Image 1 (cartoon, helix red, strand yellow):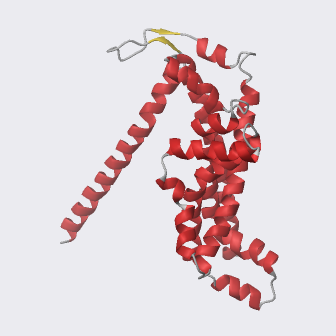
Image 2: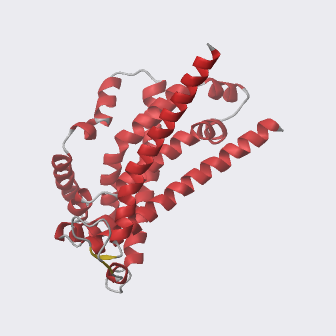
Image 3: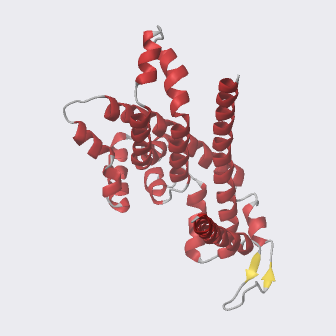
Length: 277
C-alpha cells in the first residue's frame, strides 16, 4: 500500500511538473519570438532561424521622432492613475456589496458587471459620445476614466470576494478598542486586503496599459500611449518595429508588476517578523 501510494504521489508530481513546463513553454515561446523579431530583417517560412539580423527596429524605436520616453511616461502615468482610481472605487463597491443589504443591491452588482456583457466596440462608441458631450474627449482625464470603466468589473469582483472572505471581525474588535474610521482603515482593513488590492491594481494597470481602441476614440488621437503608437506598425505588417515596441511594452508591464510583487513580499515579511517576535 505504501509503495502504491508513493508511486501515485510520484506520478502525480511528474504530471504536475509536466503541466507547469507546458504552460511555461506556451507563455515563453511567443515572448522569445517577439524578442528575436525585434532584431530580425528577414525570417521567411519555413526557416526555423532568421535569415538576417538588423538594428532597424531599435534605431527607429529610440529615434528622436518617436519620442519614446514621452509616450512611455504618458502610458505608465495613465495606467497607474487608472489602477489607483479603479482600485479605490472597486474597494468601496466591494465593501458595499459584501457588508450591506440595501434596496437595489443586485441591480447595483449587475450594473458594475455591465462592461463584461456589452461588446467592446459598442461600449467604446457609447463612451466616446458621452465623453464628447461632457467635454472629456481628447483629454487625459477622459482616457483615465474610460479605462477605469473597463477595468472596474475585474477589480470589483476581486475586492468583493476579498471583502467577503476577510469578514468584519477585526474591524469590530478595532472599534471596540476605540479606533476611529481612519485608524481602522489604515491599521486593519488596508493591511488585511493588501494582496487583493495589489491584485486589483495589477489587473487594472495591465488593462489600461494595453487599451488601444478605447484610447483612440476617447483620446481623439491627442492622447498618445504606447499601444496607440505600436498598432500602426502591427497593422502595416512591419514586424521588426512592432516587435521592438512589443519588447518595450512587455518590459514596462513586467517592471510595474514586479514592483507590486516586491511591495507585497515586503509587507508579508514584516508581518511574519512581527508574529515571530
